[in-house]
Amino acid sequence: MSAQPLLETTGLSIAFGGIAALDRVDLAVGARELVSVIGPNGAGKTTLFNCICGLYRPDAGVTRFQDEPLPRRPDAVARRGIARTFQNIELFRMSTVLDNVMLGRHLHIKTSFADAALGTPRWKRDEVRHRRRVEEILDFLDLQATRRRRVGDLPMGQQRLVEIARALATEPILLLLDEPSSGMTAEEKADLVFRIKDIREEWGITVVLVEHDLKIVMGISDWIAVLDHGVKIAQGTPDVIQRDPAVITAYLGETPA
Amino acid sequence: MTQLAQYLVGGLATGSLYALVALGVVLLYRSSRVLNFAHGDIATLGTFVAFTLLGRKLPFSLAITGGLAAAALVGVLFFFFVLRPAKEASLLGKIVLTLGLALVLSGAVQVVWGTDTLVFPFPLSDTRVHRIGQVVVSETSLGTIVTGIVLMTLLYVLVQGTKIGLAMRAVAQNADAAQALGIPARKIYALTWALAAALGGAAGVLLAPVVYLDPFMMLDPFLKGFAAAVMGGMDSLPGAVLGGFLLGIAESVFAGYISFKFKTTMAFAVIILVLLVRPEGLLGRVYHRRV
Image (cartoon, rainbow over all chains, first blue to last red; front, side):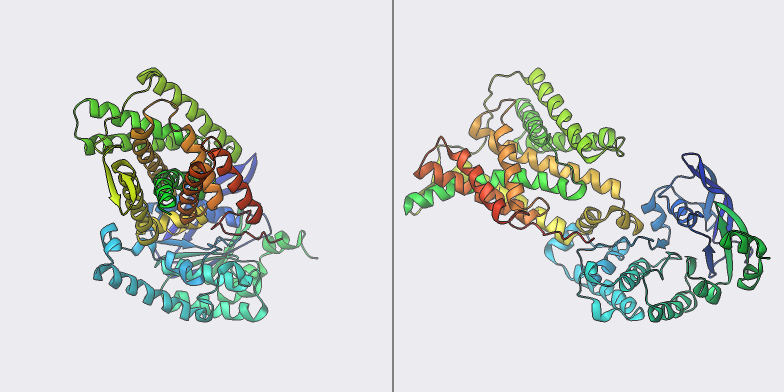
């Protein structure tokens, strides 16, 4: 970990009806790191993302990003450079792949009402510029062939990719991926691994990954944090985590003999 | 033939009013699934404010702007101080809240301006007419049609062409996703309330010279606009316009040829017919729920 973390949560806690979903979670992610958060079902992984993104308001604790506290509203967090995907896929289902990803460019649109009404050259230039960037992203994720299809009609694996494409279109500094491989075929999962690596290595984006598939997690993470019942029970490199007795207990229910 | 054209022109004028009302209803429904039963009363309030400002010797354009701004303000305040705090309420609960607002506003208008009918001084006259061939068009009708079309065009450009419009469409489809892309959903909702209310206000002002001002002037146009919205497809803005004009024209033609008394009955018969054939409305989207 670098000296100055990009994202840092300190003592993050939230409870739902008396059940602690997160209990004093400390996490420090350095710039350009690829980090995974794992844990059994209901461990609080998605809750952690939702607290960082401002969808939930934590009962206690702070989240700092680039050494400043994060705002409380999801849209303001997004404007700071944090993009995410959702476990339950939140796409504009009635729109095409292209339109979905173009919406990721919303933050970067600079034209006015008058420009749009008159179709000024400025408006067209802006449109072309965004379109070019979107095509690059579609290309990167191998989605070109689907660009005119309606998102709701695509198989789940491709919908997940569209969500990643849309997140990338916002030009994030930090990308939070929530279960990106669920619903994917084995082949799609293999591709996904390379793409996540590329997102970090070629695009220089810091990635935090919540993932069920431990094969993926062990293969690509710099380090891993393990949550169980809202508590961070372990943190370390994949090798260390695989041998950690507390982690094994959390996953298997009891210490193997 | 001339007579039919004459009825058509009349229908276009009322239709343009219905379409404006329907657009306001659809804008809100599309973005939050809330049916705004206060739409007519917000419009009435805006119209009365414009009337008072005219009485204060303000120029017509300023008075109208003031009236529309008042309507928009009521919409925004209602969103921030009632709907937003009640965001955990069920959809039905929210709709009942708009009913509450309707009653409050209607009461307020009756208290402030009284229940007598007032005459709204309008720069266009109902008796001065233009002739297009054999067809006679009053200045008011012409003004209503033109204003309606101008407002609809502006709204179209706003929604389809601009950054704000894109944000509005995104929030309407999936607010969580829109926020994750940096779109301030709360501001967009507030803006939608302002726009819808102002559109209603515009309809009220255009209606005022035809029916005189009274606290219940928007009741009938609101019901018709609402019906037009359903007929056009509740989530479709072009549908609202189409529904509004169709309803206006059907009513006017029926009133002219068959029976003036039963024109409203006929209008709703048409709606029932349309919904039997296309339950999602003329331009509404068919939703297939996946299991």
